[in-house]
Length: 125
Image (cartoon, rainbow, N blue to C red; front, side, top):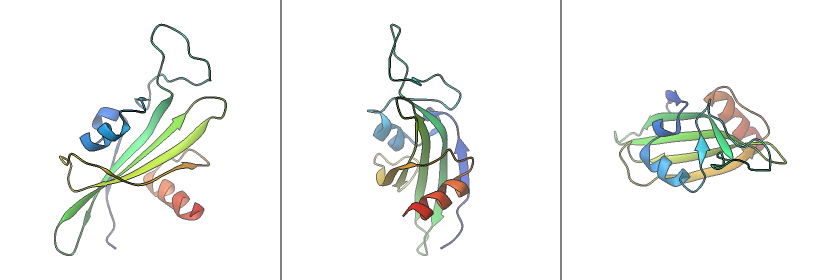
């Protein structure tokens, strides 16, 4: 398998549109944004329960020169048990209208890079 170069993003709006659509039912703050850290919501407009840590967008070349988009969404969620999670999607292009969820799981810690995240995912499978 050829190596994949990933572009990191820190705003939900910078994720591919198909991934944004998949995440719509789960409101998420940008990486530096405010989110609901505890279990109790307050204020007239509750904050999202999750916050993006980073999105990683990469292209994988296939032997037939087709390209498949690979996207990891690493995020944290507040509440009684603070958690870290990842969702891995594939799409046919940046403009695809459908993202396919390959994997969605909790991870035991916050990762700083996509390589660290992928290594952690490989170790828990």
